[in-house]
Each structure stands twice: as C-alpha cells, then as structure tokens.
Length: 360
Image 1 (cartoon, one colour):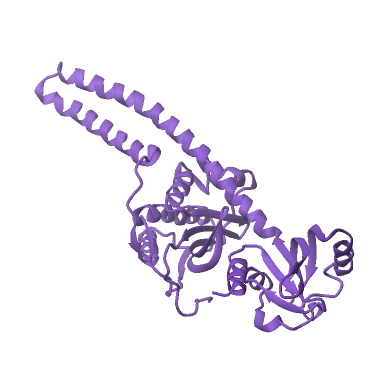
Image 2 (cartoon, helix red, strand yellow):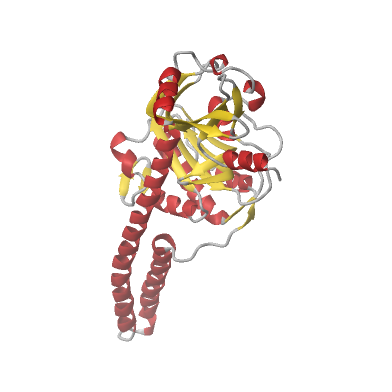
C-alpha cells in the first residue's frame, strides 16, 4: 500500500476536520470529518481556491499566514466563520506548513459543538458511575431489613398453627421476590447476554405495548430506517431502557391537549460516544413536543431518586446503565415543545446499512 494512501486513511480516522491547501490557496484534500462538517466533498472542492467556498473575511487568513511566517504555526480558539453554502461554524483552528511531495498548508478545525457534545457524554458517563455506587449502597440498605423480616417470619412460622403458616410463607415469598427485584434493578451484577438483534424488533415491541394504554390525545408514530444492520446487544436490556423513555414521554405529554411522540431510528456514520469514535452507530430516538425537561433537573436527570415528569425515581438512571452495558449512551436535549432522548448503540460489525435513509 502506498504511503500516501496510508496517510489518507489515517487522516480519515480523525474526528478533527483536516484541510490541505497548496501555496496558491487551492484545496488539495479534505478528510471525511471535514466533508461532514462542511457538507461538501473532495470532488467538489479540490482545485478550487479557498475563497470559492469560504467567505473572504470569514477565515483570518492574513493573520494566519503572518503568524505562520513568524512562528511556524497558528492557533486561534472560538473562530466563527461562514461558508458560501450557508453554514456557519464555530471552531478552534490550528494551522501549520507540512512538507509532502511539496509544501502544503494544513488547517485543522476542531468543532466546538462536537467538543461540547463529547464533554457532555463524558459527564453523563461519570454521573452514571456515581449513580451506580449510590444505587449499590441503597440496595444494601434495603436488603438488610429484608433479611430481618425473613428471619422473623421463619421464627414466627415455628410458633403458629399449621393453618396460619400460609401467612408466614406469603411473607417469605414476598421477601424473596423483593430481594430478587433489588438484585436485578439495583445491584445489576450480571450483564445480560448479547445476541444479534434487529433493533426494529425492539422498537415494535415498545410501540405495541405503549399503544395499549396511550392517552387519546397523544399520537405515537414511527419513523424507521429499514436498512439498519443487526447489532450485538442484550435485547431485553435495550427494550427496558427504550420502554422507560417512551413511557416518560407519554407521561410528560399526558396533560397536553394534543401531543405527538415520534419513535425514530437512523444510522450514524463515524460517530463519537464519549471519547470513542465508532465507524457506525445506530440511533433510536424518542422525540416529543411536550413541555420539556425543567431546567433545574437537566443536569441531574440520570441520577437516582430524581422526581418529576421526566424521571421516575430510579428509571432513567437504570436505563442509562442498561445502555452503557451495550457500550452505548443515552443523550438528551430539551426545550419546550421539543425534547429528544437518543439511545446510541455502536455496531461492532463490518455490516453497513444499505439503501437510502427515510428522512420523512
């Protein structure tokens, strides 16, 4: 394999947008992150001057070249510049000369929105670690008195008549059931087995279940990309997490005179979850036009024991944990009339989606 091909493949693996210009200011190369950020292609721009695509006064090119001449490199944060296709970007920019077969100007754009999303993902993951420790402590606090109740029931069974022992047996049965529930919902020491799964089998189960008790003024609709590949997940865990999100959306919209909830699936190419970038991820999104998550709850919504229309006690914390067991993450954004909860699941396979996505 030629070294130039290797270099191009390495650059295409980066989440940072990289552009090469020749000494005349013409585009020579854009990596995949740059194509995605600029909504254009190498084919469109190669050979064109930068001013063909970037507004003349948007990129501080004179300052950039002056600093390059003086210092050998250029760096500026929070640069806002406009492209001629109507896109406005906010980015941290670095530039330097690179010597390949000739001298090129390499400019790196680090999208600030991407950085903010990445930090938000990391914060959610760290928050979930704290949540798990709290839940484990809570589980032990619950199980200790349950052990006492079981012991008392066993002692009581030795004192009562045979006809009354059915009551002590009932107590023991319920204590055992609660212990199992705590183990499953709070301790969660065992990770469910992962199997090849069509994500739409799960979304359809959730859709049909929620339709049974859907308030008359709430409409639940599906917007699927049927081309999505199978992925390795624990289907029951993802079902439980998705069901929680949809039920929360229904609860949040229940007092609206009219509301719409959309269950949406898509593929995301070269998508980052936290600090990791994956070649392909699947998105399962729950969108609603309800009142939104209260501002005071947004920073702590995945913590346990947070109450409100959008958080059912332990529900969202457990949902987040179940998805993180699949190497995924739940992200959310919310404002009045537009709330989005996104389940992001990486696809560990060479299988790629086929066909066009449904963007209706």
